[in-house]
Image 1 (cartoon, helix red, strand yellow):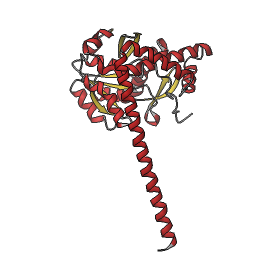
Image 2: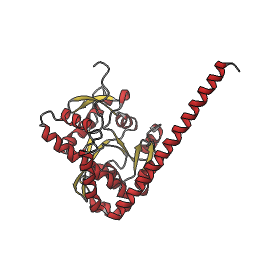
Image 3: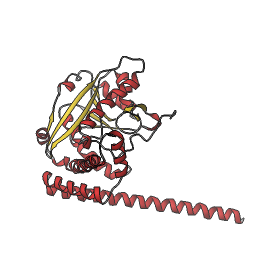
Length: 313
């Protein structure tokens, strides 16, 4: 056998072995993550809602001071959005943001333990008439990573036929665990990949299709103002609304107390200008910004919202 061919086979075998080893390590990592999540949820079930909230605040404090993952990104985003605030004011909002999302995380894990009656008691829908008006057509529900968005979807699903457009987590087992409360309360799940046909079908059936539209959409997004700066924004809600002739409703949820929440629903007026998609996208983004300004600690500032820049900048 020629030396060159032998070396090629050795190199190829080494690459295959390395690939298989990395694949096994990834599966092991996912398995550990899944069981850790499962055990943590069991602990929360034993502690109950209120004590779990105290634990969440403790974990938020540890995260803020000792494990500052994406803390710099969040602080930069807050400074960018609120240039008029002092550094001390920014830090206070940032700390409360850690608390809010630690609470949201434990609440999501606790959702399977709650009854429909309990959720109705906990969550008030301020203006349900907005949804009632859309029963004859269905609607696009535009949401954001704001407050406990999962709880909002579940509360709405108790009274209305709701579908979620969702991305799949890399860890399949953990993804199934997080999808469990959605399935328990009757939410239909539409995978983000190749969602077009299913979304159109759901709207044809007069369902309410929920889409989170507050994160960077890369080169495929529509650039619209968000806190006065152009941000690549998911335009899917506007595209689906135009195609199916259904309204867009922006939903947000605020946490008033550990066990009391309030949902706000805002129907967005369709634009009349020539650039329908861009104007509609800008309109629902502006509404999300409004609530981010009112409750800045409720929004997920850890995401690089302005990462993608317009081609001409």
